[in-house]
Length: 249
Image 1 (cartoon, rainbow, N blue to C red):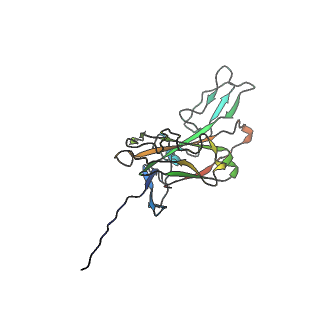
Image 2: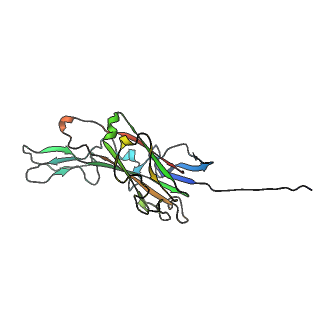
Image 3: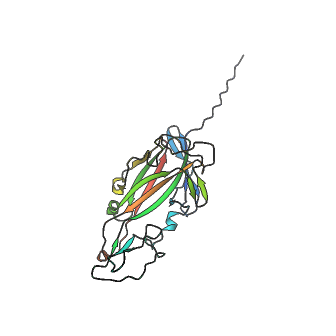
């Protein structure tokens, strides 16, 4: 007599889906689909996610043209208050307008703090971490001039698409800063060797729903504030590349 043994075995390992824009500026696009595989992470999509402008589904690269720059302030205007180019956003572009202004011996142009706010979305069935690595684009000293802070948004509607209706913040601290490895802003020059910026302890998916329903948004605030730059300093660019890696530990 011969026995036959059959042992089918199926399981669902950790999955993390990351979405925002693609390299061509199309949105919303899922460009990372990460699965656990014997203790390692494998991305089933061979492309990268690109960020969108926070609160929208506008690809960041397409929304900040070459004409965008640091916020400017006209100060010490006789008979009136200061004017700035911070009009509905946090940068200077050709869409800004100024009123004619009087001058005296102290009227001057200065730069003030500027922020670029960008985001990406994550849906998971398991706890995950996010690693960050910063590198310069041109002058390495630029990394000392840009600071980074990350926060989370559990739910909302961006570009007509709702997210997070079936999600939970992926850390039991239940605040938009829980799981972040530092509380405030950190210079990009401190992040060139790679560092976890977020360490989660639970999945984003809380109840049944779609990928968007079970996604939370990660919000990035890049802050540039070098003090009062004078017109005699001329023109210059401050630029960096920052890569975020979502992984299941």
